[in-house]
Length: 638
Ligand code: CAA
Image 1 (tube, rainbow, N blue to C red):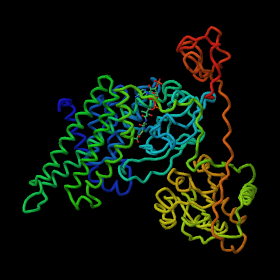
Image 2 (image 1 turned 90 degrees about the horizontal axis):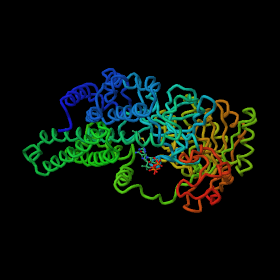
Image 3 (image 1 turned 60 degrees about the horizontal axis):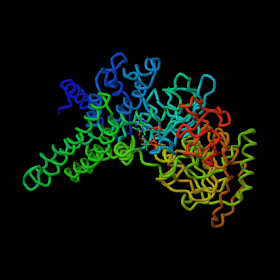
Image 4 (image 1 turned 90 degrees about the vertical axis):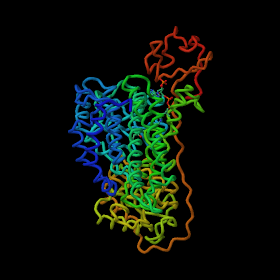
């Protein structure tokens, strides 16, 4: 291939040999056990291969973007999950520090990342900010020489395994993407914790976790770039990241194709290898053609990036095309294998599952089309102008009271909770059987992983009986810990709770769980971690140890033998109105409609961000049309 040199071929041969020896034999087990190949990645790092495209002066291998893409391709050729570990580390974790970091940040963070001593990750996606990455809600507030980081990130590749995270958070609320900044955050800092390793359909050897930030102190010097540059850093990082995902898709397709060719030559039907059948030959020919086209797109995008030429559109095209054809290739490869390919343990079966994510992450393929079209046609007008108003945060479970009961002693808090529930109309002299199917239950008491040891299930069961409720759980409690049968787990993929009262004990509130309880009339959360997302989705919350709170609540609700509950009457949810945000003092130009936003100021007019309209100099004029200051009126978009 014209893009590659002898050096690239040697690098490919080295990585292929290593991947065949170290990853291929264990790929099946990694997939089955949802296991991250920690030792192997360390080894890969020691060979310098976690730093392929970075200069030697920063600990890198001194290779190029194409060499890195070949690395991802070769790992993915044997295991798609291992491929994305390299891609997320290089393009998303290390690259933004290389491109936007200052010298101190590069020495402190890029060098160990490039040397492979540390692993990197990137935290952009949130429950309300997926494709609409500008909807970021995590906040970073400057207090003295630190920012205080609060919020959550979901679906983070290398989450929990990585040591260094590039995290995006809002530093100036209410001004959209220009209020987002990027930070370098280290694993191990106080208040930075991880959710469970998601149980995914494919790429199961790569770790994907939720990141939780609870008042994490981030030193000021860990701001990457300037305040407000975060969104652009994220977008341009993703431009490069998409080359990595394109290479991953290419590698998966290549692995599936090779397996299909080999099998077609071996498998005999109608007295000859099936490779002699034209039906199979055509499939092989099409697979090979698509893979070659994808490879040319991926390598040319890598070359453009290497040469510092514009490559955003080309990387989006490569990512979209390579992942689309990857799905077609794995489908055809499995078809060549027939029934054999459908069996667990077969490489093509794993490739088939690994492939799908490539059309979804680092921007869905629909977002790639948005990016491609905007390069060709310019940015399309947004359906509705983005309001500079801070967006009201709607919890996954819909508007909730979010009353935290933490002022008094544990006893007093529990008493207060019971009083509030009784005021809401809950009658604890009646109850349902603990085994009532979740879907029919008026009340459920649920256990999350936060309850700890299995023996603590007894506390949850006792509470369920005292509350006259059925027993439920989060998915990991049923599936991984096996504390309850599978049919008792509540969530998007499990049983949906649509009754009245849901008491979540030690449940952190993963989005999939929350979606399964969004129709509950009342949600109560009891958890030791005050920053657990469940609290933002609950009507009442007590922060405390389940071992202390549950027995107290059981005692307070225990009215002796319960009368059978009457048929369920669905209770109406009552939630207070959201407070109206304070006016933010924006003014609109009568000449052209330009809006003066105090938080932004006017860079061209040398007006500092934070300057109120009334404090603008009298000689200030509209930066768009030159209209004078007195021809501005207060904006209705306050
Ligand atoms: N480079 C630099 N700046 C860019 C840019 C780019 N590629 N794209 C946009 N910007 C700038 C724009 O110029 C604009 O700045 P100005 O106002 O100064 O002109 C600003 O960013 C806002 O741009 P838009 O108005 O176009 O932004 P938008 O809100 O309409 O969003 C989008 C555009 C393309 C839809 C974007 O939100 C997007 O890419 N969404 C997908 C997010 C994504 O890929 N997430 C993946 C998460 S990571 C992941 O998946 C990792 C993994 O697991 C492996």
